Image (cartoon, rainbow, N blue to C red):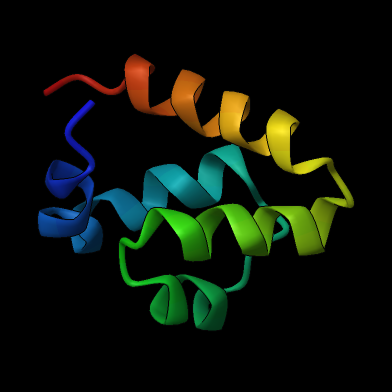
Length: 67
């Protein structure tokens, strides 16, 4: 997977990320700024999920995006 697409289109994708993970704040999304490791860390923090589960969830979300 090419996460660079997410980083390059972060402003457009922030809304979709917020739809998927509504507990993330606008400040969280600004801090994340398209970086996958930051996104996974914030999801773990807000939802209390295990790292491997978050990785799978992000992979699933990424795969569902229409490029």
